[in-house]
Length: 196
Length: 380
Image (tube, each protein chain N blue to C red):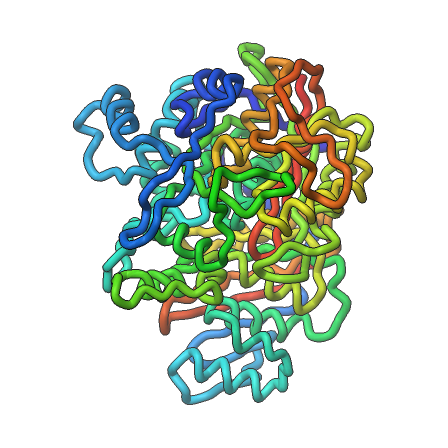
């Protein structure tokens, strides 16, 4: 099992040097921060849930309404953690499984038929998964290291090791890590802040 | 002290050729892949850099036996062709990473579908390629818009430096699709003629398609034909706008600054910049501002978009490979279609091919979502 060694070693390094300070989970129309449910609705539809959460937390950020659902999901989870603190040195490392396929699908529908051919730039811009990271960066003026990965399933080990490497290189003081998966009505966000 | 990371092999599949040698010859002759192609029904043709599908098919059949030929999309064939020679020359071990850079993968499969075909998942695409060549670790897909190809090199470097992997095969690719063409067209970002990065009359991008592959390792065996050290990297967001570059070039400036700091290389030491240069008004202007802020305005610079168009997730890796080839051949390649300065600040844009000693290369890219990326490579 020689191939396992480097990973074990890495796990040890991480445990010594990094800590998770805040965690936000969003799924099933529920927002949980540090194990406490802070918002819940009976609404099953993601768009309505996002709208209600926006009102509840008085996010007061009109750009939110222009975002696609993946960006809304990533944005909401990040807001719960970043709040109004200074994050000028916090990197962003995000990942998911479905990339931007939720919006890709909608965009494709707008160009499928020649009779109803209406490609929209406002939709097209969200056909990239890293746009959600851009939205978070804009809100918090984070001119920091950004990375977006697509993986077949949630892999916290991967996110942590990529974050650890950013912290060790001195390119950031904190890293906001996130698994932000969304396709149609199936979604889950797991976003957390790592510091040294 | 971090481990030293080297690029020791690479390959590419583009409209100008199916290996680096044929690409290099075409570039020296000033050939471009950009031409008019009909992409969307009921719409005029677009200038794009597109691979001849018949030639691709012939090359694929020549190199892969028919038993293995079933069920690969055009893009997958391009990926397989670009990876094949590298996999033959370097061993895949339990500690070998497989990193794929793409923006849209097999997005063409989505047309007229009511449920998602499996092949449109980027992780499925990566796994299919990984299984074909027998990679043992889980594939990593980097999808950061137009900076993905540059970032894929950074990710390989960083993951090897953490000790998780000993080496990595990095592959990057995107194809011309109606999906992407119609989208950029809706943004009015597509040029009405072959693109002219940094030129006064530039009016937009040409899209392109290509795949590129590189072998990156921490362990040298002295048999390498060449070595480029990956000295530094950074990818900083503008935090300004999701679909337009920062007017001040903040993110690119910071990316270049961080990469140079990590590389311990100063602006005077950079011999050549392989820039992004998409030929949109705002991108090229933003780059000029960022490079001037770094005092890099006198360093010879080119954009390869006049030759290859903008190949999205492939661009950064393809252009890095051509830069390294430039360094090996001691030849700076012209920034094709550039005639008259069209950005507000000085840049030393390469007007014709010329010989030069190239040791330190700066490669940059910028893209949607406000992302930017920079790497520093050293010829060893």
